[in-house]
Image (cartoon, rainbow, N blue to C red; front, side):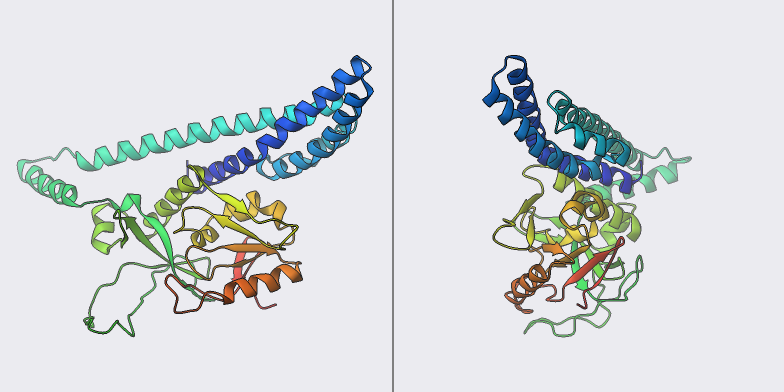
Length: 347
C-alpha cells in the first residue's frame, strides 16, 4: 500500500477515536429516550430525545469527512436523530463504520511493517553469485551494521519556510554566519534538505536520546534510500507518531479564543503541515473555509478558519511572541491552506 494511502487511513482513524466518546454518549441517550417512551417515563424520554437530537448530528458531522459518508446517507441519519427509536441509527452507524475503518487501518499498518521488515532482511542478506561478490556483500553489511541508527527511522524537521521553492527538488543550503569559533569549510557537505509543497524546506533527523542528529547523505545511502524515499519514510514515521500515545491532540477553547493549537511531542508540531490528509480531512470540520496556520517555531502550530478575522489577528499576535532568533524559530509569516495547497498568507 502506498505511504500516502496508509497515512490517510491512520490519520482518519486517529480523528475517529477522538469522536467515539460522543458517539457512545449519543447511543446511550437514544437508548434512554426509547426506554422512557416504552415505559412512559416522560422525563427520561425528554432527556434522551433532546440529548440524542443534539449529540447525534454533532458526532456524525465530525465523523462524516473521515468516514467518507455520502450526503444521501448523512442527512437521513441527521433527521433520524430527531425521532425516538430512529435516533439509534446515527450512533450505531458511526460505531460500526469507525470499527471497520480501524480494522482496515490496523491491517494496512501490519502489512506495511511486514513488508518493511522483509525488505530490511533482504537488504542484509543478498545471495551473491560468486565468492568475491560474497566478500563484498559481507563488507557492505558490516559497514551498515556499524551505523548507530538507520535513516529509515528518520522524522522530518522544517528548515525553511519560503514561497516558490518547488516540490521534490533538493535545496542547497549554506551556513552564512557560523557561531563564533566555528569554521565551516567551503566544500562542507550539509545534510540533505528537500523542497516540499512549494513552501517548505524539509530536513530529516534521528533521535539520539538527549538530542536530535541530522541524517547525512551517507546514512541515507547506507539505508538504500533516495531523497524522495527518505521524505516519504519520514512522513510515515510522523504519521505513526500522530497515531501513537499520547498522539495528536487539538487544544484550545473556542469560547475563549478564535484559534486552536495542535500538540504532538514537543518537537514536531510544525511538521504537521506536511500531512495533507490531516488538513484536508481530519481538521476540515474546524476550517471549512480553508485554514490559516502559524508555525513560529518547530514546537508550535496554531490554526483558525480562513474567514475568521479575529482568529487571524490572534494568530499574528501569537506568532509575534516568538522572535526570529529564538531557539527552533521558523517563521512569523502565516500560511494559508486552500484547495489542497499551501501558500504564504497575504491577507
